[in-house]
Length: 332
View 1: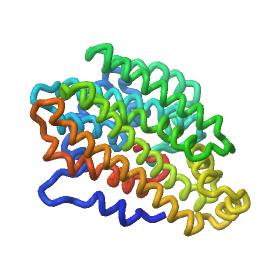
View 2: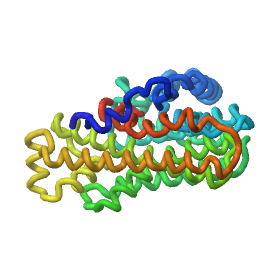
View 3: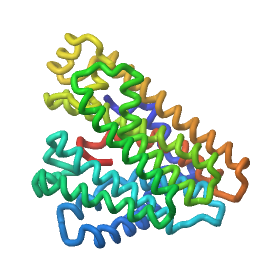
View 4: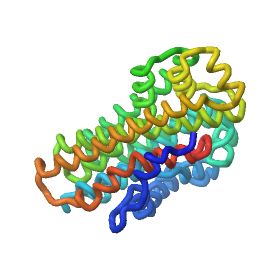
């Protein structure tokens, strides 16, 4: 499926105003420095694992920094948000190490996956060891953020288990949406809440920020599933995982699914339905951004919400376009 025009137009530059990816570009140096510091501390000279954590688009950390910058009342904690953004990136990177083992993927971001380079047993042990890193980053900032990290971690693993158990199953719309929320929504929600809490927000505003982040995560995973489904069909690969659940949701007739595999693409009507579904997810996340902006006055404090609201609103469409144009196992 080509990137829908409606999605692409949401990501266009608004003259004189920030966009999500522009903001990410401006903050990525600080994110990479903090991640790199902890690669040096916890990974050392292991080139394969160090390269794994240095890669990626930093979308989750970028979400934390955007929420922080939009909501900071000039009494926020810049060092705290960088620690928490790095914690989310390490949690995400560890999950990819395990995902590649579960999926049997030998490549990641154009190179060998960690388990292909180091072996499955070593990679599993390294993943367990490295789980300490996000908690080490979060712990100095209090039990509340550490508890949020633990909850998001558990939700993400539950999502992976659900995906394994769903092989060949008909989840239905509610089940599929719950699956993609667990797989990606939880970490994006965590990142957004972390950004709001580091900015000194009240609990009401932090919860609204989390709802916005969850919407971004749903857009991210739905777009990723579309891209992976199209890639698998065109390459004649087995359609599995959450993209397999999406195929069974959108194409109910087993014979029609077989035809899609044989011709290497979905029917045009199914493609249009996917565009409509994606547009719906993007619109929900945009509305969540506006609800968050509307809550700012209730909690008091000065912030840059008016300046950065265009970036918050454009983020869902930009993420959708980015995922649809990315290659398989890009690890965004």
